[in-house]
Length: 357
Length: 121
Image 1: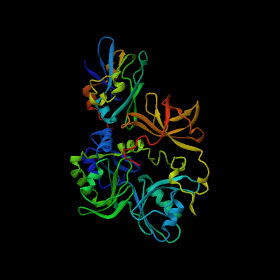
Image 2: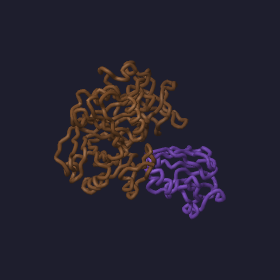
Image 3: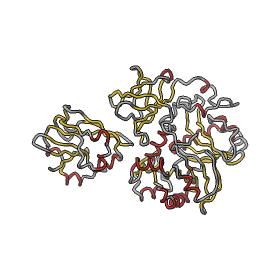
Image 4: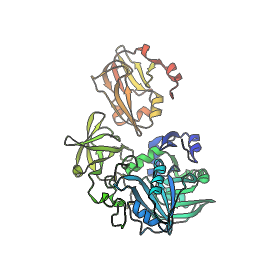
């Protein structure tokens, strides 16, 4: 099992450890998933996300390769800004979803899902063309997410830098630790993701834990990371997205730009998707989970990709990928262990923080 | 009265000549984490030893509840409909269902034996 620089810290602080994508990670700590979830919505939480992978792509042909392999358009991405996209195959299926940071002219930092690091590296290396250099730096990078309404207050104790949403700053010093500070996240709250050298990760984490005490900072595990991103309707690879699903089917059309000269999935993604992602809330008592079958007018139309009882809304919520013909319907039924529970379609996201765009 | 335990982490306790109450162990609630939903057999339904009588759902997952007794459901603890978290707060005093039936100690563990059980293997 792979570890992160913080694995020992988690184990020493009652982390309930699980295998996640081959990494030994905390699902939650002593206070439990609900407490951690509410801490992020109301205060501030720290997440060890060092398991995520990082690649560096650089060279004169870096941009053209990204344009060719990733669904979004990066031509107007400025240095100091990050953009989300989906790494796709020729048939439009998804290899992974990525966050791409433009650090210099012709140099990009690419952040990928932990479970897909090897697959993504193999895919990039098999596809890259021209004058471009690819490097997998995952093992030497630690990552901490600071998320919640007090995240900015906490960070401002260490730096004056002002970052807009999806902005970042390289080579920033937090005390004597060199970091990449990025105003991004995966919780639906304001917050930061901070990259540092693997050997500095524990020190940085302890700094935030100590400094944030008066703000109610809480160490948070992957359990609430999942409930938070689900409320914010953010896709999770392996659930909404997978090797058989296109970004269009996963409801990510706003990150698919076809007005590019050379794009590997140009043709495949030019036709209307046969499946679509929807949000559901349950009317009947119960909780729909991933894999539950979804019906409309008695007909099987798809499956739940993620589901839980939303801690913020106190209501059972779920995302499903269904046949596109039923996309506009309002009423659905979900099979939960043999019982058909009524559900209604709702607009995504389930939760949007106040003041969010 | 004394509680007896199934290896599937439910407890059962005789409350009078004809009725027992069923709950889950402290180990079970801890392992489940925050409990957010409960569904059980209803009044008048039969339950059988080792068979599913409901599901308990935490934020992270769903687990089956297995009956530690044979009999017929005579009461359901409706407090848990709106406050399933009571099972986390006081598992040994919060019962889930009451069953018309008898504790069969030959198929169950004493509290002492249950607590001594190596539950992680």
